[in-house]
Image (cartoon, rainbow, N blue to C red; front, side):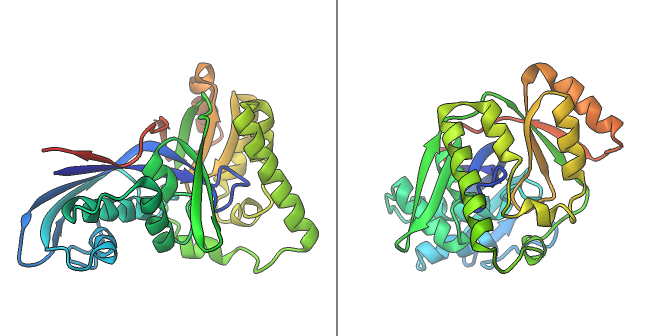
Length: 288
């Protein structure tokens, strides 16, 4: 069997650890025959090939007695770039456990398991459900709600350098003042309301008004402010740091894509630019 898992772009500005969108980069896992031990065949650097691989480790957390198989893995999701590569691996592992173990898991059960492993639902929920998803942890359990998808192109600027999530989180403050926390939460709440109301001009302004993380992380990703300024001139409704970075994501009017990309290049940024689509569905099981 084959499992196809989309990548994800999280936070969308003020939706820190709670909002994410599934995108058209994919982790593909081919499950081959049973073997004496787990073996993951792939071409990625510094990623384990045995049962410590995150895909297998996640599957075994769900069903520890799962018989070993050989897996063949392909991925076009950049590692350590804020595009949910670890979340896709976790969700892929859960899907393997569900299929091989005949567990019959519902989506809400997969979200609960994946978010418990990841710590928050912003990447795993859209990876499971597809599209744009808002989620949180309440009373010890995770919940998620799908939102309307903005009708804009996703333009990702993917710097050549990596940025570990641990390093990106290390620059965040340990606490915020009560007043700052209230204002940051208000911005996030209103951004979500604007997304559901499909008032994208207002949503874009709020997505660029985050107070939780971007002002701290921008020192690690100077491209964020440069691209945001380009976007204001060339048809982007919003530019935000994707996950922990360093990928910078912009929602751009399709009529202005070329102007936007040319503006980024003229600003002196030479690394990879990719046009992506929203993945309307989450993890898929495909028969061989």
